[in-house]
Length: 221
Image (cartoon, rainbow, N blue to C red; front, top):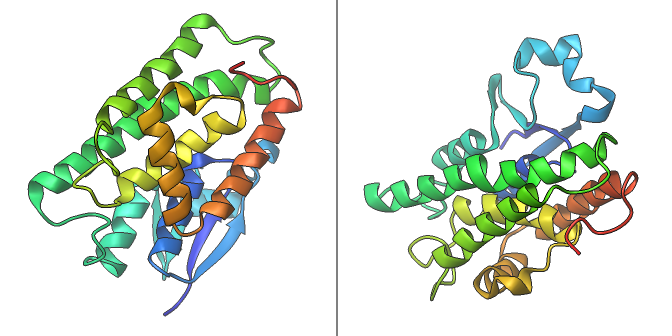
């Protein structure tokens, strides 16, 4: 099997989601690092394949695709349709999609709003409303996991991989998951089950270092 090229920035949770999906499928991945802080995403060669200048982006034998959720569902559809990671059953798949959209639109955006200003040195403290937004999002996730091991249909899916990558970034900057016991148990299960999770945690630690370069104290004391 030919390698899939992944344009990757390890501190990025979406990039790590796409990479963990590929690892879980056992795919050969050729990682091409793109340093967003050095604006390498605006390089002419990269803009030719992705005018949105975003990562992750993949090159699958000349087929270019970006957005981690689109990438991950594509990879499963092409290389692991029977893996159970993106189920064929319409209702189950809809539930997976619902949790993917929650990750993209709610959880990731709220954690990003807290952390990114510190990476660029434009904040000195976390506004209470932004901090509460993260708490509320994780409360929703906690309720979604009540009496469940996984988010959907008691099987690991791409929805778990996506949300786990995002939660990793909250954990490394000081968020205490014990406030959400269902999330804490699920996150531990993800650590022990998802292939490439150690790699994910290394990337999350790079994210922590970027944040703490301008704000050494935890963001969620």
